[in-house]
Amino acid sequence: MKLQIEIDGQSKEAEFVAVNGLAQLKLGEQMHSAEVSQPEPDFYVVQLNNRVYRCAVDKLPTGETEIVVNGKRFPVKVRDKKHLRGNVAGGAGADGKATLVSPMPGKIVRVLVSAGDEVVANQGVLVVEAMKMQNEVQSPKAGKVVELRVTEGQTVNAGETLAVIE
Image 1 (cartoon, rainbow, N blue to C red):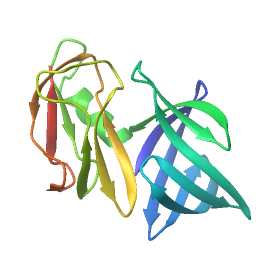
Image 2 (image 1 turned 120 degrees about the horizontal axis):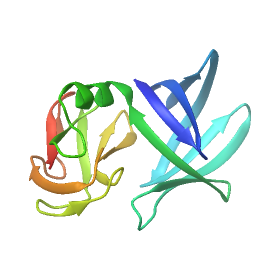
Image 3 (image 1 turned 30 degrees about the vertical axis):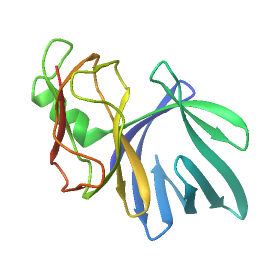
Image 4 (image 1 turned 45 degrees about the vertical axis):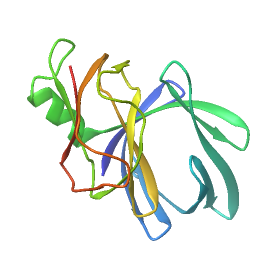
C-alpha cells in the first residue's frame, strides 16, 4: 500500500506491506523490516534491528493522532495515496462529499462515530483490521457523517464504501 506519512511535521512517501506479523516499510530507497505484534488494541510491540519498541496509538480530543514510542510522542498523519487520488478525482473538496472506502479487505473492529455526527479533518471514523494490523480510516475533511454503511464485526472488501462525509 502506498502511503503519505507525516511524522513530527515532516512528510514522506512510503510503501507498506504487512503479512503474518512481519511489516515492511520502504521510505525512499531504504527498506525497513520489523516483527510486529498487537497484544491489545492501539498497542504494538515492534522488533526492529534487534531492538524492541513499545508503541501506542493515542487519539487526541482534537482529532489528531500521536504515536508514543518508548514514552516519546510523535504527531503523525498517515494517508493512503490511492484513497487520496480517488477523493481528488471524485471532486471531494471542502464543499463536496467525501466517500470513505476500505483500503483493503478486512473486518470492521471499531466504529468511532455515528450517522449525523460532526467530524473534523483527519478525525478517525472507523478501524479496519487486516492481517492482524488495525488501520484507522479518517475523514479527509470537516463535515457531517451523512451515511455510515458498516457495523462492528462486518467483513468488507477493498474499495467498499464505508461512510460518506458531507
